[in-house]
Image (tube, rainbow over all chains, first blue to last red; front, side, top):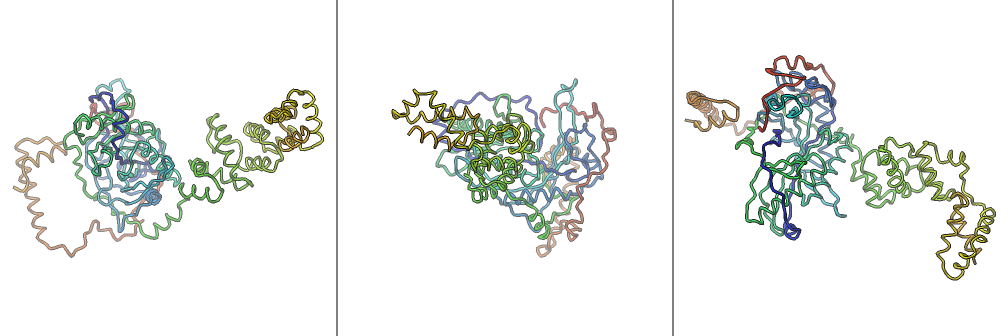
Length: 501
Length: 99
């Protein structure tokens, strides 16, 4: 795909369409997502794919497109692409898929063509389930194919950038898969959910780290609008440069409003490629050569047809981990979690692994889920840490949950101990022993404390006896204060009620 | 003529080639001769012959793939040695505004 700069393009006026008008239309969106595969080396040569190397160091005759150099396909790239395709419920093309040359000229494409797949892609006919507004929806996957990436053009940042473009070919030949969805998405929210689920899935099957800042996940959208109730698709535009989740939503919202405004004013949509400009929040049409899209695809003569035998496919299938959707369903079934909680706890494989280790060690998995989603994620976020860097081990969290579940410590004391566990990495029992925090479940000791408090607060005692039951909370608070939160709350409640009659 | 001057100019433009009128006329003749030869090949009935994409098609599926192991690279100095223009470790080309 040719890269483009946003310079020299006409800007579009800001769009004003009333919500009523907008509501009469429906958007039809399909996404094309490029995912960088996490191989050590490039797709057709043995150069490393490492990010941030000095320019033009990770290159060889193959990725530089030097005469006579021949591509040799990376087995790991094929396996990762197949994994991704299986995770997307696609059918792997049989008896073979084929590479094709896509011809165009751009300085960051030294071969003069991209090696991609055209009429015989690796995989087809899959689907991905998204969860929007409490409803599940299946989004069709048209195809998944393998291709090589281009280099990088730098248009700014050098003394003579007004006259020259600088080209770094390190990225040339990095393996990509392109995942094309059916036009099944009906709103920016659905598109967002789709990209999010896709990212999660790719991370689960470990075919990509999907780091958007490093360009591991790149997204283009095909967008059209039609009046609600109309079956026929409107004319679509292709919106490029949607390289963050925020941009995706903003750009789609803008483009949908723009198309509606054009149609409402009696105009027609021009089929074109538009570039999203994050600085202005607008999409602008790109002036491209009339026949720029004539790529003259033909079968790549330097590569064999790609055959994936049943035996190989079985081996890859056997190596697949549990996918997020399966894991969510299991969490609901096995641990009695709510659907939403299962969704949160499967947001990354590391987080779901943490939960499972803690849940397995505890008698109360639902309480574990609440502690992980609430206190633990909150504390980690406050310190800018990932779940893998948690100072509290899953087994320690399970221990804390069980101490509360068995009534050995109160929930309030639990929160206090949690903070100390997070700060020190010590187990809850260690902290309890060290700081003498064991819960007071001694009825005689508590009885004495309660008597003192009742004696010191005659007015509140009168109020309670006069029918204000809410005052009980005041007394519980006082007892907790006097015991530094170590009183057994059930016992305190019971004793208070007895004494106040 | 098997191929029109217009088609030759279109293909030349796609290939970033600038041809003189004289060259366009010559290309019409030469490309036309190739296409005529294709017609000759098309006289053969191949409807019962399985298409062959590669002579190595029957090779073991993994025999022609590489392991994901790093090999030597050229390095920037060698990579840039033949570049008409380079600087700061980069290839330099006339400023690209759009393709």
